Structure formats: C-alpha cells, structure tokens
Image (cartoon, rainbow, N blue to C red):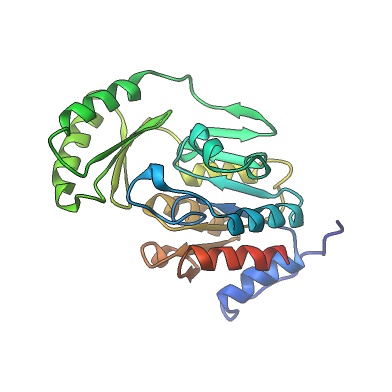
Length: 259
C-alpha cells in the first residue's frame, strides 16, 4: 500500500477526533490499544472478560489497513492475552505486563520468570479467605487484588499490598478497583517508546486508546511523540486529547481508521 506524505495539522484549532482521523488518512499512523475497558468491557472478575466478534473483526481490519502497525499494550500477561485474543490479533506486537513483556515477530523480551507471584497468590488467598468479594489474579510478573465486588474493602487491600511491596521491593500499581503488585521496571509509557522505536513503527504517528490510570504514562508518551491520546470514559480524560464513551465507541473509531 502506498502511503501519503505527511501533512501539518494544527493541534490548537483542529477538532481532536478530526485530527486523529486526518492523521490516519494523510500520513502513516499506528494504533496502540489497551485491553481491559478498551477492547473488552470490564466485568466483575478478570476471568469473565471476553472480546466480542465485532471487535475482533475491527482489529483484523485495522491491522491490514495499517500494514501491521497495531499493538496491544496491556497490564495483563502475554499468556492471558494469548488466551483472550485470536491469533490474527496476537500475531501483532504485544506489550504485556505493563511493558515487562514485549513480543515482536514471535520473539519475546522479558525478565527471567520467578515463582514469587505464585507464592504471593497463595498467601493472598489465605489472607483474604474470610473477606468475601476479593478476587486474586495471578500474573506472570504481577499479582492483582481486585475489590470490585467489595469496594468497602479498599483499605484492607491497600494495607496488605503495601506491606507486600515493602517486603519484596515491588511496585504498586493502582487501577480500576484493583491494586496490583508488580516488578519494578517499565510502565506503559516505556512500552509505547519501545514499540515506536521498532523499524516497522518508526516515523509513524501513534494513536493510543486506553481507559485506566495505568494508561496515563502511555498517553504522555504518545503526546511527546506528536501522537494522539484517547481516553475511554472520564477516568483519564484529563490526560488525553479526546474522550470516547465506551468500548462500542472504541470499535467505531477503529473501524473509521480501517476505512
């Protein structure tokens, strides 16, 4: 596919949505996407999340339209994303575990795996066994403690995770009704910069779509690169250039870029 030369877009006077679409049409662009709350609706527990057929078709279409310049940037692990997304999507670039794992053309860059989070999941299950509504999510390089079903337990979750972070020298990542313990290191902003340094993405204009606090560093990264940050819902809208209402609106935007 022959791509159009770059054109200058006035970021002050242009409508944000029109600017993003114009970038996609007049210069090479790439699309970087969060997963939970962006490509799939948030559910009561992480295991209930699923990507619908319409979204999968939209992703496949935009990946073809952008010659593969699409990436998933998620706090979930590679193993989780591989189980939730079809091969036509997971064959694209994946930055998982908040950037700890990066898979490009089937090659994975990641720290050495550790049994720490399996042990912590066991400890957390014991600790919260008499606290209904707390859901423990073990990841390859992290542990999520979800309190969506018991929001009044936020303080107890904070107390336990802060103690574990101090004990094991871990980073604490707050999200939508979840507190995550993870290895110190990259965040989603670092993941964006690593992706944009890849030969296939270099020189393109990034559009990042995300919904949660973990996506804010990615927003700032794409903005620094002259790209466009889109918040799903109001939670992170103050850090973005544009706001979409929900997952359905994200799918519509993806379909516009693919058109």
